[in-house]
Image (cartoon, rainbow, N blue to C red; front, top):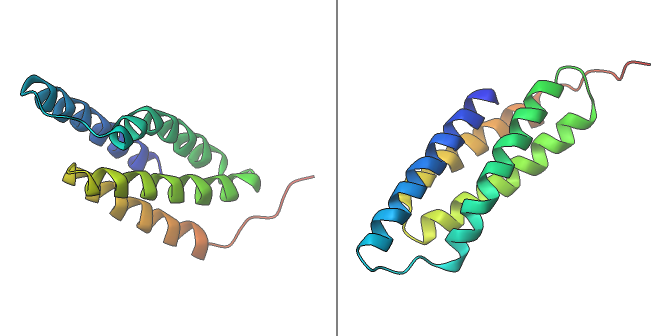
Length: 110
């Protein structure tokens, strides 16, 4: 999941650069894209938090699943509005969802 957080941060930077190019050329940037741009750093932080806590904390599994679904939906919005590099983020989110959902949760420590 740490790898996904780094990749998502990289995709976010590419999206910022792409928005800058579009604005420089007088093109509109749809409102949903601006929402995704604001939401993406929050997702990166939550993914990193879930990744750090997953081996030790049972609540991290639910956080990881929730954040991955939100990340996939945000990436889908990006793809549908022309930011095709977000396909990578969707694939990463699907992979992490599969890994987290098929792994066995560790018992909570008392």
